[in-house]
Length: 278
Image 1 (cartoon, rainbow, N blue to C red):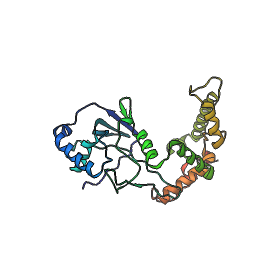
Image 2 (image 1 turned 180 degrees about the vertical axis):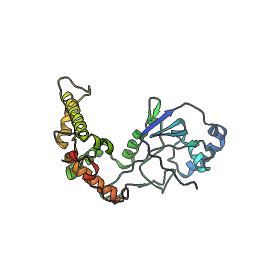
Image 3 (image 1 turned 135 degrees about the vertical axis):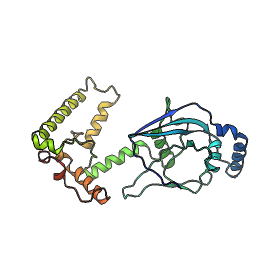
């Protein structure tokens, strides 16, 4: 077996293309007979429409592929017969839900399904409900599968995230700005000036955002959403600087060391310019 390769991506470009599947067309009689045998054993199987993919491509942080529509019976035969069309793959997402104790949530597939007895994260092959325009929405597919298989909805994630913040006071960091040490040695004023520029830009953005009589974002209920966020995070929902984020930074450094990403426990004072830690 070929060892798996892990690619870390941040963007998905999954295009729906209306195209035939030669395997399914040529093996139609055999596929129908195979599905009939499976249906006799598991009467709840359904030959619904699903989405499989071709042409996987990795480029930088992006994964791209071309999806096409086919029937579940064709997919089942292709899977059970050892994936004879090697140009096709089943591209789906899984919801890896991690509990407060560090354990992950998995489930055992019911006997009436095609994967009865197997253990999985909440997941499923994309179907027609996952098409948005001319694209396949894998994130939406995962959210739907998680809800169907666990009962958890996006509203539950939000409640859990808010409870985590209230318990720990940790708001995960979004961005950090780096300056070459050689530049800072030549221009020691640079860190303070750069920080002040970002802080001033944030003040301008927040002031514009709080002009509730003329909304910067024309979204309904945006004021209520903004106030609800402040009720949890405080008035400053985007804290800048080391002091305001020290707990999150210290916790991140500890996690990185405990999980083997750093050979030693990093200290905040070693990561930021002196003025930033004051």
